[in-house]
Image (cartoon, rainbow, N blue to C red):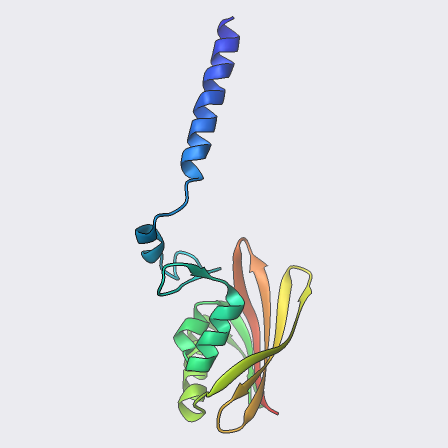
Length: 155
């Protein structure tokens, strides 16, 4: 009898705890989530969370290297206008900032995307002073989408 009561108490405690954890975030809690806390998502002005693809489109259109870099893995295989190198996250951000300073984007569209194992790839078009072909390769690390490779080449 006591064992059965303990089992019921554990069940009630567990279900109460999991339902409390499963409560949705309030609008204020959603607005206070930062990119650093959620690398797989990006906070938007209305407090909703945005996934990788729309975040990349918005960041590339704006030429925002800082936002793009929040999605970089620890090291990024970076090829930009024919110069290939493996950069740390911060180095890759600086190279991208320099590129955007010289080539102000006016549009960015995803032409093709696909999956390969636990990763995704995106073939995109960046319109700036000339048209560039952008290829992004990502991998899933836990719940976070990380850019492992970025290529920008003139079309």
